[in-house]
Length: 133
Image (cartoon, rainbow, N blue to C red; front, side, top):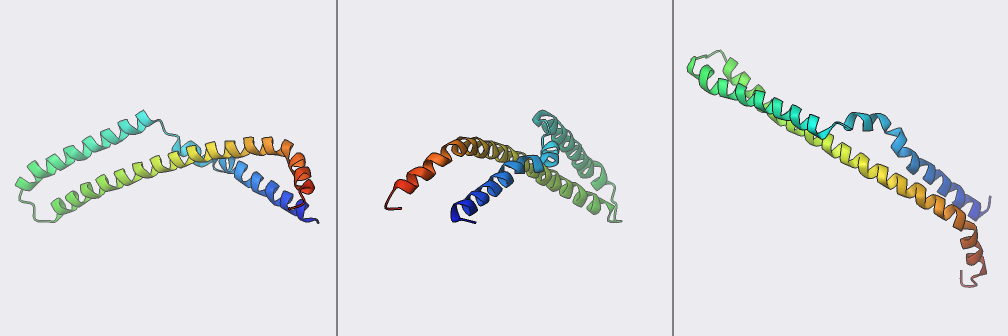
C-alpha cells in the first residue's frame, strides 16, 4: 500500500467517524431536545413547589416544636432538591448545546469533504509537479 493510499484510507475513516457522530448520538439528541419553554415551565413549577415547601417548613413546622428530626430532614431534602434540579437542568442545557455544535461541525466536515473530494486529484497532481515537495 503506497503512502498516498494509506493517507487517503485514514482520511476516509476519519471522515466516516466524524460525519457519523451525529447519527450515533441520535437517542441522546432526542432526550436533550426538550422544548425550552416546557423545560422552563417545569423548572418554575418545581421551584414554586419547593418554595412553598420551604415556607411551610419555616412557618408551620418550626412552630410545632417537633424534636424528632423530621423538620431537619425535610429542610435537608428541600435544599438538596433545589441543588439537584439546578444541576440537572444545567446538564441538559450543556448536552443540548454540545449536540448543536456537533451537528454543525459534522455538517461542515461533510460539506468540506465533498468539496475536497473533487479537488483531491488536482491537488495531488500539483504536489507531484512541485520539485520542492
